[in-house]
Amino acid sequence: MAETTTGTELPKGFRSAELGWPELHRIPHPPYRLPLLGDVIGASRRTPLQDSLKYASLGPVFRRNAFGKEFVFVWGARLVADLADESRFAKHVGLGVANLRPVAGDGLFTAYNHEPNWQLAHDVLAPGFSREAMAGYHTMMLSVAERLTDHWDRAAAAGRTVDVPGDMTKLTLETIARTGFGYDFGSFERSRPHPFVTAMVGTLTYAQRLNTVPGPLVPLLLRRAGRRNAADIERLNHIVDEVVRARRADGGGSGDLLDRMLDTAHPETGERLSAENVRRQVITFLVAGHETTSGALSFALHHLARHPRVAARARAEVERVWGDTAAPGYEQVAKLRYVRRVLDETLRLWPTAPAFAREAREDTVLAGEHPMLRGAWALVLTPLLHRDPEVWGPDTERFDPDRFEARAVRSRPPHVFKPFGTGARACIGRQFALHEATLVLGLLLRRYEFHADPAYRLKVTERLTLMPEGLRLRVERRPVRGRAVSDAPVGRAPQ
Image (cartoon, rainbow, N blue to C red; front, side, top):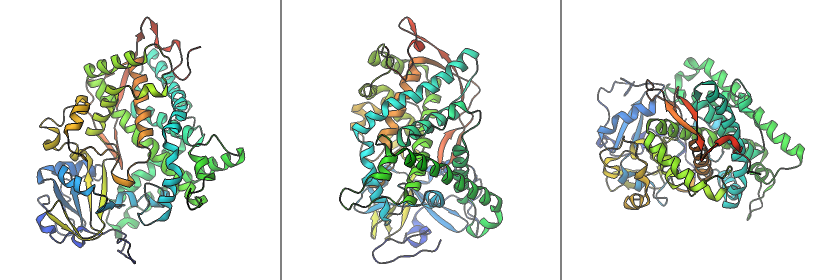
């Protein structure tokens, strides 16, 4: 995409780093760089993020070249803190995110900063994540969790292992679909993934592949994949249009996110979201609202199965805080402080949205060291930021939820833990995701013992988000205080 600029807007389109970093030569790059091809020796098209993590030894800022395009990566805590300064830096819609614009357009996640629909949608939808709204979603979250535990109960009784990433994807898709849009995909009743999931995975995978193929060669090398991607986008649009049509036919729902999109005007301007933007926002929420949370839950269950002492401590907290309550209330979820630490430590090691990009609003100097021109950008590698030994100590690979004990959190500088991005464009649904994930972990810990396959070695698959690949666990039903956990369904209060 060619670089353009108009008026006071920042330059748009891809800008190779040499256009915005006057002293780029001072930033180290990997050895064995090849003419025209760049830093491709040892690179993997399937795991570009994990490839970049290997270069932490180059320092807290480094660069890579892919087919003549220069990219600057940042992970040092001091530099990231500077990039978090909203007065000097803003969100940059980088290549990976921009590749999703054919399906998500100017949705909340993929909109450029200059596009007015971002602020309009944000202001209209933000009340949908208020404390009052979240409390209303809680009962539906419990209901979906019951479908998961019914599924796992059958697997436990039959001695089968469970497909953790697959089941977490079903859970989180059903949760956002029901709470946000009053729609049921029937994921747990299907023998194959819902067509929405298949199309979503296809579009995310295609967007990832676009990052690894030189632009002029895309029509040649990805012709067939491009046709499949177009069909996937058409399928996503069709499914979402059906959801919207059903809501309009019903005359409205219960004030959920879709109702807000269709019926709520901006409180100051009176402007409403267009039909096209509603479609884009629904797709954004369905994809982003379940893909990252399912990954976080999957990684958390992997760690709990591998660390039985941590699981026992978390389970003891659940039993102490929830007692015999079959259906924990909304307020009881936030009281699971150690379970939340388990989740935070999981997101430290494997933030499922593993990077975010920032661009300079004006000419500036990053951390007093590296000049950046207006519009220059850098990609923050969150897994490396979360492993900065100057912040987290020498044992950053060790899974230790006590890193998030309140005193430890207060002792660390700001901007060192960024699983949801930063600034005004940080994830709007982060509290929704954290409540859902904490609730689900609490329910599963109380109901099951987790048994890992000793032969399994964590392999992380990348499709813009991260997910453990091939993770299966054996789950064993456990009694609680003299009765089976299933005596009262998790989704309904005891009679």
